[in-house]
Amino acid sequence: MTAKESMIVVVGSANVDLTTFNEVFPRPGETIFGKKFDLGFGGKGANQAVAARLCGASVGMVAKVGSDLFGPATIRNFESQGIDATCVGIAEGVSSGVAPIFVDPSGQNRIIVVKGANDTLSPEDVDAAAPLLRKADTIVMQFEVPLRTVYHAVRFAKANGVRCILNPAPAQPVDFKEVAAADYFIPNESEAEVITGIPVTSADEARKCAQFLLQQGMRRVVITLGERGCLVAGPEEVELIPAFKVQAVDTTGAGDAFIGSFAVFLGEGLEEKEALSRANLYAALSTTRVGTQKSFFKRPDFEKEWRNRGGRL
Ligand code: RIB
Image (cartoon, rainbow, N blue to C red):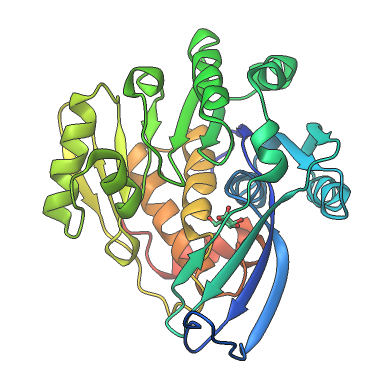
């Protein structure tokens, strides 16, 4: 472990995940029995904040939750983990974000997000959180809140000299000019494909897609490739960082584990390549447990795995 402590602020979503584990999916008009159900805190933003916290960073969250049962519980969840939730507001008369999730026997998931209060997070909320955001070494964002808020936060990060990691998930058409100032643009394969129109089914295609994104003005692109690892591309080089083998039971939240941990490893001052390799392992380990936030490893347990696997660089 490194001595420098990282300070991460996430501007993003918080959901409650309602996950069912099923052998098959129902056809139209059909009712079937699922095998198991899990209720947990989720949302891409919240998951990334929790991953960063479990990796040992100081973490703050800028978000909106609903004025329902889930809203105050979500805030308590942040607080109980030691995440600064002073910039998490309650949107009156609006439901919290929720995500029905369906996991098949191979661990693959299908997710429907109902954004609820996440959709009320505004540029003004970002401005109100300025004192917290200015303390960060890295601001992390996703696409589960309004894009105008994301674009505003990217501008804030740039204007204040704070590193900015943008995870364009779930995928939506992007105004590249608005996000070009982000230090890292990190989609997964399917997000990269939706955003660029370039299919990403192999490392070679990921390379072409990353080069396209660089041509649109992105500074550094990382495309996460699941069990193939991730591909990092900058103006001078493109490199595949291999994955670690694990027995996956539920891949939900693995992308968030990757983003949250990568932000911390970079913030601690590790070289980019080591930070990415570690994030590959942190994400892979999360797939060996059920759930999203509850599947994330604590830092000492992660370090043990990293050492056991000989830290692949
Ligand atoms: O990335 C996984 C997350 O996507 C889930 O926690 C769900 O809430 C959706 O935001």
